Length: 311
Ligand code: C5P
Image (cartoon, rainbow, N blue to C red; front, side, top):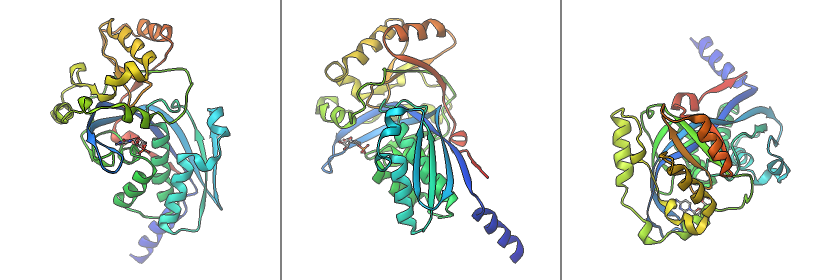
């Protein structure tokens, strides 16, 4: 008996490399209820991972090191500013372990696009290093660290389809939504500055809702009904004219073709839920003409979102 136990521990401790995917997300709904005294806003949302993923490799190392591939501007930034690096550093402090990790981050999710790439990388590093270092922090402790890194990070610890409340930090995993193909449209890499705070600041009480759209969408997901265009909503669309006119113009043009087009997060990307009637090639071509880069992705289940390969 003792031998079997020892073997399990040995296996856990002999992991040298972990490879995992960090998926992008979209918000099926994104409602803002009110401004909070702590400077954040109270949210209700149903979030969804999609199969556009960054690839992350974590290797045991004597210190924390980060290499970014596939996105030259990001690769040139000081590593300490990257959320993936900061996630490893935060976990190491919290767990009190004297080990390091070499992180190789292959970027495929467009940066600062509203698709949650940086937050997803951070969550993947938290989960991966927790395993690599055998740190054994539970979900509650990981969620606390995640929330300090950013409001979207806790969701990515679970992925799949999940209901979000609080400032983004209250995550309730739901059954996976009925799978769907999604057209993601991202603007050319331009302003990579912090636009989320500006988008929140642009909202006024007129833009606040009660969470009913989110409750209705949750119910549909719980009942196994496919997500329909009419169930989607995003509070930030109300300030697009002022804040992101190019995105609004492109979304309006696609809506004129009887597609749903919804903002992804706080923008500037947007998405269209594809159904079998859509002429996908024509839709992608039109998106390109409008100055946005189209990608077709598929919703990613929780099980796939949490996959990790160890060696
Ligand atoms: O949490 P995170 O650092 O990603 O948030 C960036 C900014 O977005 C915050 O400083 C805040 O201004 C705004 N925000 C908000 N309400 C939220 C999440 C973010 O007002 N629920």
